[in-house]
Length: 155
Image (tube, rainbow, N blue to C red; front, side):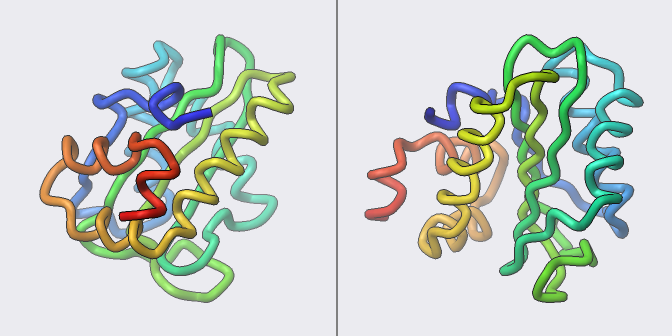
């Protein structure tokens, strides 16, 4: 699975003025609603419910909030780079500035897990993370995120 399969160019944003985890989840939910046709409230509730079980802040400034709900046809992703890192209750207690939200239909076990593994693998690549943090705009972020994995690891 490549990220281009689940991430569209309009689902990549740069956010400024975000101060809390709830604000970033809401902003990503708004973007996801535009891309998926689902309601902002439904998306936010699914992701926030998962977040209540434990933070999806992985460390190194990265978070992968995710949720499942009825109504989606397939796994979908939304990515944000925050201009100012925020507290996300990450495992390393470091603020987060790179957030990839994953949404999956109910019952999408294998596809959801494949997407989660693919995103985690990509965001563990130091060169990719450095390029994402240095990117000027959403188009550049999308280009970095959707390169085949073998190219991003070599970069």
